[in-house]
Amino acid sequence: MSSHGTIERRTPRTATPARPAPFPSPPRPHRRSRLSRLLSSSVVQGLLILVALVWITPLAGLLLSSLRSERDNASDGWWTALTDPSQLSLDNYGALLEDSGLAAAFGNTVLISVPTTALVVAVAALAGYAFAWLDFPGRDGIFLVVVGLLVVPVQIGLLPVAKLFGAIGLFGTIAGVVLFHVAYGLPFAIFLLRNYFAEIPREMLEAARMDGGSEWRIFSRLVLPLGRPAIASLAIFQFLWVWNDMLVALLFADSDSQPLTVALQSQMRQFGSNIGVLAPGAFLSLVVPLIVFFAFQRHFVQGVMAGSVK
Image (cartoon, rainbow, N blue to C red; front, side, top):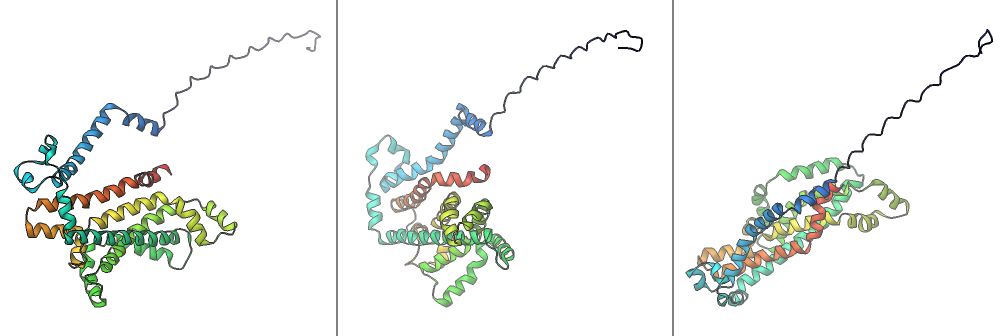
């Protein structure tokens, strides 16, 4: 009401219309779904099948050559066995088992590869946990030394270590070959497992310590199960490196402790094109790493993908 007694009429304010909500943008597909759709496409599957055939063809050729007689291998190619299966037999493998030198070399390869892989994995797991979660004097400096050893080539240590092994009686023995492989496999193994163990949440370890768990119990019951993918990947790589090695075994092993790679090289040098012995020996040397890889394939893939998932 105004001072003159008249009533003011106020025009009501019109409410401003609400703006329509923007059209929601479609959710972005997850990277994993994109990758799955890409791998499921026919073009990619065709390329993968082609790559698999390229990789499998030499293995198939080696297998068929090992099942054919030496005369058949000398007369025509291995692919003729696909149309004439009567050429295939196990006589070459029987002759290989009767060859005491190659049979002993196969056993030496197992005696070198299995203990080396077990020692490298065990020592690297303990050292990786210590470098990742234990405080001790000089920890960072020692770890830098371990990382620095990664750039040291194997060829530099061959002669000094050979003289050392000769002085202490390990030269020309299986134990000497195993110790050399363990020494040169540990730097990479420690570096790999230390970085993987360091990704474990600190709160999980602190909760285990508050519950009264000792360091050994935490390591064996918590860290090792969580680090199983990385440990399996390391074991596969280490086994393949040692199984296929010829340089170290050629220098540090004698005729009684030589592995299969050195024995096959010696057979090739002595008998030339003795395909009846070389083909089955080479296939046995190749098929064992394949069996190990496919047996631990699931853990290997988890270890490779662990970094991207985290």
